[in-house]
Image (cartoon, rainbow, N blue to C red; front, side, top):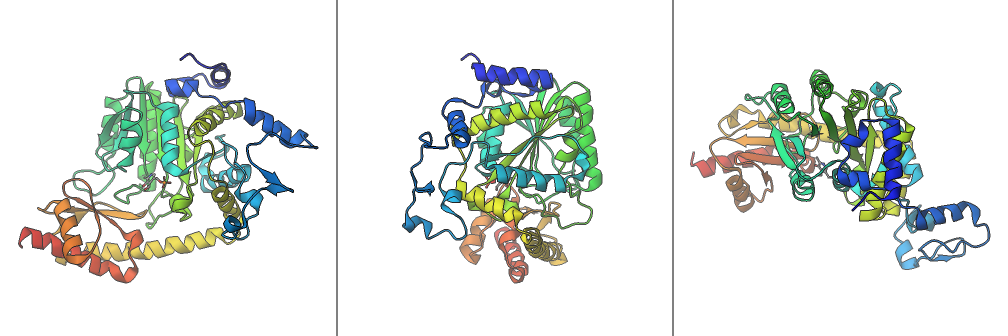
Length: 436
Ligand SMILES: Cc1ncc(COP(=O)(O)O)c(C=O)c1O
């Protein structure tokens, strides 16, 4: 298929605004556009059709959308107009600006660097998939940590047919981020275009870099971009804000990556899922940043992204967007969020104590963890799948077996008074299976 005229217009805007960025896009990314037709005509009618508006594909009655009392009784403090009409494929404007405001407050290091407005997606999984369409071609190399969220394989490996390669996330002693291992893989795959995924706080290990490590990661990427690699860095910030350790870098790495180098397109994927504890509401965002990026560039990228949304899910749930937009404007939102993070921090501290108990020294080594929802054990001389099954069978405890010896524990789902007992049971299973 040749490039559609509207896509070509956007590609021209992108080339005029920033000559490098077209090379970051996939072939599909180059073909994406935001359709005019019905959407443009209805939005024109919204402002100009003062008598009758017979454009939109919903049904109206009186001043608002037609709706059923049997449905509406489940919504409190949301008007029918905040629930039932379609949202724009870009997302609800009030939500986009509230989220952008939140992002700006979290990233003082942006220091005036222009970034795009966030485009709303059906939470982070959809955002990662749309980003895949925007920047990943079949056969492209994506460099990921070897401790990764398994769904990346489906999203980019299977659906986009990318070549997924990993870098060792931790050093051999399992004490810190493996900067040397990361740099080595960056150099190794640095010919032409390279897509890098950073997921901090990390799923499954719960690791988040210190300020020093974060700066070193950004510097490694900057050097690679300077060496001529066309770099796309996807920051999966699903667990942003769940930090339990004073050394952690609390600004998203996107703040520095977005102004790092003209060859480095930074893409921030974030959302309400984990941060605002609204998993099933499904609201996420995609935000772009690149050194030298301006509003023309970002407008074109936003249109292509909204085109990918339009062509997949059309638009994201209106009530979910209305709820998050309103919640973000609630003066109590941030305190309530911090209160919940404080609960998770207490659980993290209890997990640290339980895991490090010398009585379990023969059972496991914990991967470093200081953030997020999870921690991971490397079990000693026993396979994680066997322990998982034994924990279910004899203890009624659910965990996740990952690599051969790695067991993930979601302490986000354990009450404080359950934590010591949970790890005692894991140790019991390890010893039972080893016969020790
Ligand atoms: C690292 C990471 N990214 C993305 C997601 C997807 O989140 P969502 O539920 O918003 O699609 C998850 C969910 O577990 C995750 O752990």
